[in-house]
Length: 98
Image (tube, rainbow, N blue to C red; front, side, top):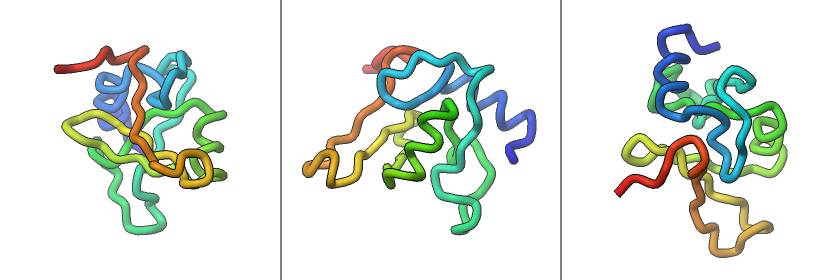
């Protein structure tokens, strides 16, 4: 569980579901540990991202990886969906930064 102050910071950064092309707003999202808490991941801004319920379940089911690089969540698809595993991000809530 993410405490309110960390959830607010993640919400300010992500703006809504961070999964590529998703438009679900932040109030409808869940905070997700990018490195699972059960695997030693910390409950911090650098280890959390917002995901809608659908994408939260998809991440777990399909084994997507999430890397937060320069404050931006990047989603790396599993090899069976993209053999090149090209990183993707959501541009809806957070426009592309230079």
